Each structure stands twice: as structure tokens, then as C-alpha cells.
Image 1 (cartoon, protein in one colour):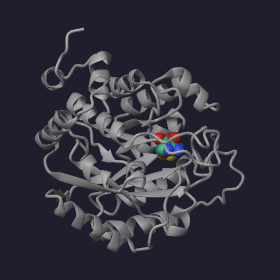
Image 2 (tube, protein in one colour):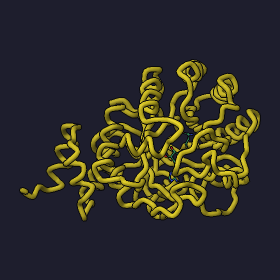
Image 3 (cartoon, protein in one colour):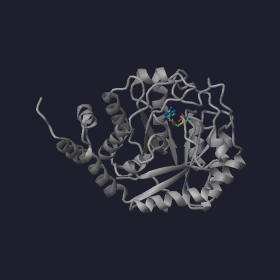
Image 4 (cartoon, protein in one colour):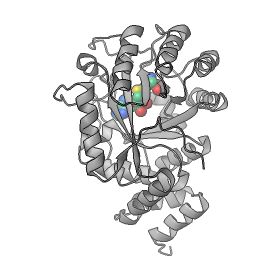
Length: 346
Ligand code: SAH
């Protein structure tokens, strides 16, 4: 085989916004990713600018009807203490965050049917009434009519990761649902006009570099406005207990390739990346990321939103945490976005 240089492939992908599975695999396999990372940083600068969007996430319920094999809040985990925040609690946390500068609130939970369409609607409407604030939902697979109602009531975005583009692996990891159903939901969300986000995990069982290439190409096919690309971390109360965690470096490569190929999506430095190695947060910001998510709910709930093992951290107020991340952003030579950071259209 003729040796091709990473540089040529990178330039081709940037200029044509097209990539083959083989080209992506080549970049994922490369020992030295310096050129890829620098290219991703340039594209990020040209398309998104130097702003970093801070999204506040409220993990409002850890009840879940699903049995995802990797997830600590799966419904078979009987050891987990379950919690639900009330509408008033959610809205008052969002207000506190809005008052200290958050312009973007993500509402995430397990698939908890306790929050019916009208409860979710009333939360969306209350938060939207604060002013210029974006609302993102991440509540899993629901009926088309519910998605439709929430969009009408003001929700701007919806995050529903495809988790893996390998249909067999997807179906094995999600015994309660199917890959086809996941894609159906994603298409519905797009059709309804949500700024739709998807994403995937690095390090799932049987994953190959080809799978990761397909993951990135699926993000492109879905024309996502945002993508969460995070490494898998094994949780003791799941079927995947003891399974090795994903690689941070491979995660950063996936993020960088997504940036040079798709260009416009908002790409967060994902929490699981930070958990594994705090320093990688900086790396993600220099390899294509332009978003960071900060948890907002009280600490007693954060511990129970136990998707993957989280280290215990010192308790701070929403204001203190906001200041800390703002200082960090300024320190790395970027600036804090003052807008809700809606989808970038190119
Ligand atoms: N119920 C919602 C929210 C899911 S939790 C939904 O279905 O969309 C948010 C994300 O956490 C998931 O999409 C998944 O990518 C990630 N996640 C779950 N378990 C994980 C683990 N063990 N390691 C890394 N990420 C995990």
C-alpha cells in the first residue's frame, strides 16, 4: 500500500467535507495526531470563533425504565437510591443559574414517565420566561406528539445520542429498545425543527475503529447541531462491570475528526473525559471542542445521578462553580459566550 500522509487526508476532508471509512480509520490509527489536532483547532476557530459556551445541566431524575448494559442508573440497579426533582425545584435551580450568567439550560434525566408531556411543558415554559435562554431536553425516547408539544412550548434543542452506529451492538446494549427506534426518534426531532444532538461512546465492547468511523459518518448524515463524544467508563452495578474504560486519546481524535468533517456542531468536552483525566479538558478545547457542561442540581442528587463512577468533589455554589469555569476559560485564552449558543448554520 502506498503510504499517504495524514496531512493530505486532513486537507481533503476539510476542503470537501467528505471522508471515507478508510480515511477516518487511517487518522484514528495514526501514532501522531498533532496535525489532526491543530487542523481541528483551526476549523473550530474559523467556524465557531473563540467563544466557549457554558451549558448548565440539571439532572432532574435518576428513575429510568431502560436497562442499558453500560449505564449505572439502569432499571435493574436495585442498590441505587432514586430521586425526582419537583417542577418548582427544577425551575428555581434554573433561575439561580440564569441569574449568574447561564444562557443555556440542559434538562436531563433517565427515561422517567412520571414527567408526562404537560409537566415537561410547564418546566420549559417557566425557564423560557426568564428571557434569552436556550432550553435543551435530554430525556430519551418519547412519542412524536410529546416531542412536538415540547418544541411548540419553546424547547430549542434535543440531545439523544445514538451511542454506537453498530446496529447489533446497539441492540445488545439496549435490550428495551432498538437502533431503528433510536434513529426514528432522531429523524423526528430533526423534522420537528429541534437543534438536534447525537453522539457516541468510545470503548464499548467489540468496538473497532471502523465502528468509530461509522459513528462519525452517522453524525454527518444526521447533520447534527451538536455532538457528545465521550469515553465509556465501566460501572460496577452494570453488565459491563470490570470492562476496560475507553481511551481519552481516541476520544480526542474522534472529536477532532468530527470537527474537520462536520465543521458546525457544538462539541462539548464531555464529563466522562474530565473524570478520566482532568487535564484532557484542556486538550479537548484545543482539539475542536467549544462547549462545557456544568452540573447544577444539589450535590446530594449529583451523587445519585450515577451513570458512571464520579469522583467526590468539594461542594461549591452555582455561582462559585460558574466563576471557576469562567476563570479557566479566560486562562486558556478563550472567552465566555454571553449568548445561548444556538446551532451554527454554515
Ligand atoms: N435517558 C437519556 C439520557 C441518558 S444519560 C437518553 O437516553 O438520552 C446521558 C448519556 O450518558 C448517555 O447518552 C450515554 O452516552 C452516557 N453514559 C451512560 N453510561 C455511561 C458510561 N458507563 N460511561 C460513559 N458514558 C455513559
